[in-house]
Length: 135
Image (tube, rainbow, N blue to C red; front, side):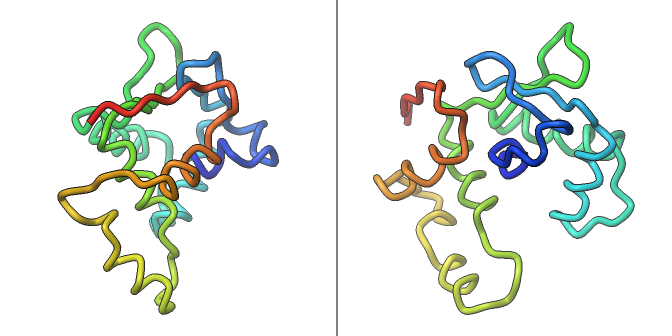
C-alpha cells in the first residue's frame, strides 16, 4: 500500500487524506488487484484484501478509520510499522540482494532503526507527516 501511495501514478486508486497517516482506497478493486499482484495472489479482490488487512490491526501497523468507507490509517510510531516497511522494500526476485536482505537486521527480533532505515521509510510517506519513534 505504501508503494502505491508513494507513486503519484496511482492517485486515482489510493490517496493520502489528512496529515496523520490516513489514506483512502478511491478504487478499492484496483488496489486489491495490485495488492494481489504484489503478494502473488492473482485472485485477490477487495473482500479478501480487507480481511488480510485486519491482521495488521492486531500488529499495530494500521487500523480502519471508523465512519469512513475504504479509509485506513497507518501507525507510523509503532516498531511493527518499521518492520513492515522493511518487508515491503524487500526485492521479490531471488537475486543476491534478496539473500542479503533476508540476512539483514530488519528480520531480527531485536530491530533497532538506523538512520538508513529512517531515511528509506520516510521517503515513502507524504512530506507533511511528522514521525516520532517510540520503541
